[in-house]
Amino acid sequence: MDIKENVPLAPLTTFKIGGAAKYFVDVATEDEMREAIGWAHEKSLTFIVLAGGSNVLVPDEGYNGLVVHIVSGHFSFAHRELDADGGCNLLSLIQAAGLKGLGGWESLAGIPGTIGGAVRGNAGAFGPEIKDFVHKVKAINIYSGETRVFVNAECGFSYRNSFFKQNPKWLITRVFLELHKKNSSESAKLAQETIAEREKRHLQNVQAAGSFFMNPVAPQNIIEMFETEKGVKSRESRVPAGWLIEKAGMKGAKVGDAQASLQHPNYIVNIGKATSHDVRNLAQLIKLEVFNQFEVELKEEAVIL
Ligand SMILES: Cc1cc2nc3c(=O)[nH]c(=O)nc-3n(C[C@H](O)[C@H](O)[C@H](O)COP(=O)(O)OP(=O)(O)OC[C@H]3O[C@@H](n4cnc5c(N)ncnc54)[C@H](O)[C@@H]3O)c2cc1C
Image (cartoon, rainbow, N blue to C red; front, side, top):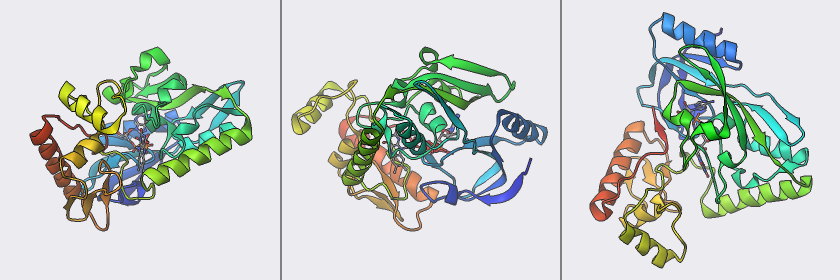
C-alpha cells in the first residue's frame, strides 16, 4: 500500500477548494480497501472516502486522517448487462455502453463523477435517475470487511438518496446495470444532445459541486406559486431549490469568492479563490433567507466533509 502524506485535496474536487489530507491512498480493489481501512484502524485514524470529487466540499484545514481515494476502473458487458467497478467514470460508461449498442440512460451523460458516487446519491437529470438502470450493487462493509450484494429493491433508492448514503459503512465496489438495446450512433447523439442542453442551461465547467441543495418538499402554497409561475407540475411535492433561492433574492449573492450562480442559483460557484468557509457561510445565508421568506428548510446535497 502506497500511503502518501500531505496530499492536496482541492485538485481532486470540482470545487477546487480545501486543504491537504494528512494521509492519502489510492485503492482499486476490495482487498486494497480492506487493507487501507485496516491501516487506519491500526493507527486509530478516522478516514473518509473520495471518488470523483464532484459532490464534496473539503475543509480549508484539510483532513486530519486517511483519505481513501477510489480509483477502480474495470467494466465488462454481458448481453444487456454492464458490470462496472464503483470507481468507473459515469460518462465513460455511458459512452462505452453506447459503442456496444446499449443505452437508455443517455440523459445522465454529463453528470460528473463515478458510478459508485452516482449510485450512493441516486444521481439523476432530466427525469431519469441511476436507480432506473441498477440491477444489483456489490458493497463492502468497511468495519467487518464483509461483502454483500444488494438487489435494486434493497438499495433504498429515493430522490438523491439511497441505503448507501444512509449507511456510509457500506462502500460500493461494483454496480450491475441493466441497459436497453440502442443503436450506437443514436446513443452517441443522445449523449451529445444531453451534454449540449446541460451547457445551455448552466455552464458545466465551473468550480462547483453541482446543485448545492436538494430540491425541498414544500408547503402547498409554495407548490402552487411555483406551478402557476412556471407552468409545470411539481414532482413529489418538491420545488426547485434554485427557484426558491432566486425568489429569496439570493441569486448572485456572494461571500468572498463564493457566489450563488447567476445562471443557476443552486450552484454555489468558486469564482476565484473561495475558501470552504466562504462556501459554508454563503450556504448558511441562503438557507436563512429561504427559511425566513418561505419557511422551507434547504438541505445540502453536496457533502461537507
Ligand atoms: C458541474 C456539475 C454538475 C452536476 N450535475 C448533477 C446532476 O445533474 N445530477 C446529479 O444527481 N448530480 C450532479 N452533480 C453532483 C455529482 O456529480 C454527483 O453527486 C456524483 O454522482 C458524485 O460522484 P463522485 O464520484 O464525484 O462522488 P464524490 O464527490 O467523490 O463523493 C460524494 C460522496 O459519495 C461518497 N462515495 C463516493 N464513491 C462511493 C462509493 N463507491 N461507495 C460509497 N460512497 C461513495 C463519498 O464518500 C462522498 O460522501 C453535478 C456536479 C457538478 C460538479
